[in-house]
Image 1 (tube, rainbow, N blue to C red):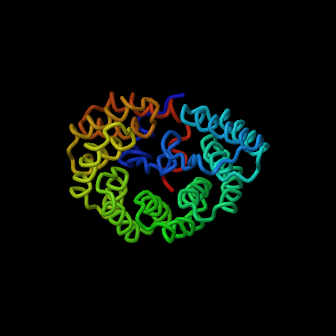
Image 2: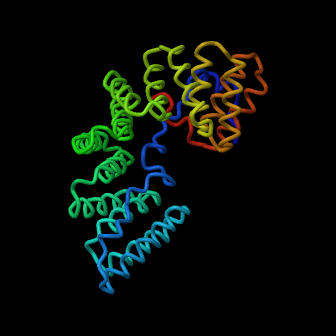
Amino acid sequence: MFFTFLNLLNRHLSKSLFSIFAVSICLSCHVALSATMQTNVYQTSSKKYSARHWIKNGQSKYNRAKYERAVKAYNKSIACYPNYFEAWDGLGNALYCTGSYDMAIQAYDKALSINPKSNATWVNKGIALYKKGNYEEALKLYDTALEIDPKLAITWYNKGIALIALNRYNEALQVFEKAIGINPRDDMAWHGKGYVLIQFARYEEALQLFNKALQVNPNRGWAWNNLGITLNRLSMYNDALKAFNKAIEINPKSARAWHNKANTLYNLGKYEESMRTYNKAIELDPLLYAGINK
């Protein structure tokens, strides 16, 4: 059922919907596989050999985004030999990518009981806690990881995301700057800093950061969405519209990008097209506006 345009205007107009890149923090389901294969670890016993075989199988399935199959492979490895760190760590990663956060945390705990010095495992456990809304707990784990290796930019980035969730923006800004100092090519850290600057109404500075980040990686739909919001705040409506269109091109199912595009169309005086675009956002996510006034 379509919302009436008047109702939309009264309740939602000008309320930009950011994408805070929570789904992209560190443990990208295609990127951050922290399990490592160290060939000198494995012995020649049949159980260990079988366990190693299933670990490789699990990694292969994980890398091809076949997460449920990866879970089965890692479980078979554990059944063969239950003390392989790589099996428990890989299982945690695969479970995370299926949305089984509690089970992923249990697997990470087992991995850390075998190897408590694994920086990536502490980070990934923190990410799983973050996804559950346990931001303070996640923050503690990121600090533990930073004690092990303070020079890993992705850990600082994840800490910044947790601080944003806790509305601790000044601290988050410092943390993102730390990440950028370690790895100036980390586009995620640039986006994180830009998001914080928007909270401080420092739109022109944020715009520079978003543009720089998108030069490094132009394929993040949510990044184009946040760029469009920044341009909209600067009354650069035509440029904002282009950014939202790019966000929608990358992810046509992003209700947030459709909503923000509708705002921009309204600001350009294109009221009928704006109404159609709001309705598209609602069609994609009927609950989109449920908590917008919170």
